[in-house]
Length: 228
Image 1 (cartoon, rainbow, N blue to C red):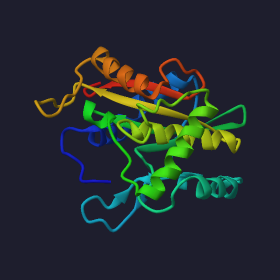
Image 2: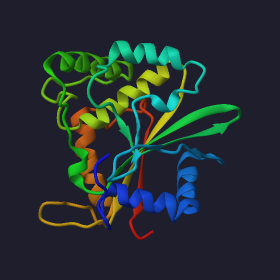
Image 3: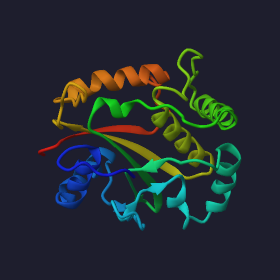
């Protein structure tokens, strides 16, 4: 977790929505998922003087799950254990008919946040590429050699892997991508001012990953105005 911007940025707006507008936030998520309950996990404390908190990472949120050891074993085999694992903006779960479904949240406030590439070493990159390609295959998706999942939209790609990993371990999970509308925009920072502007960029990302027509990946988009 880096230093949070004051007054703008996805971290700032997500904190506002979940802190000062929690009831409305929960209502939007419940409506999106057609559920009647939701429980959010706390972040961990840390000794970082700038934030005092740290995001939940990797599969740490599953530590109390009965089959955590199974997931951990697969995770250790399939994914490099050095470096920085996935950082989650927010994690929660819902229980419907005694079935638990994890809710993984990623938030974005400007277009630049859609792009990322792996910074792994050559050896780790080989493992990551193999794992991502297998996750894509499990979802009926073909990864183009021209558009490798380790480049450009790597963050969404590795989140798709986590969804695949959990599914193979019998754990239900959904990824909600939150897109904030109306954030600070400038020449160097393109922040969509409408849902339509976001959708143009999201479509480009999904086409790059070849997932625009996939119905097998549990990813749902949620658009939130910064001012409600």
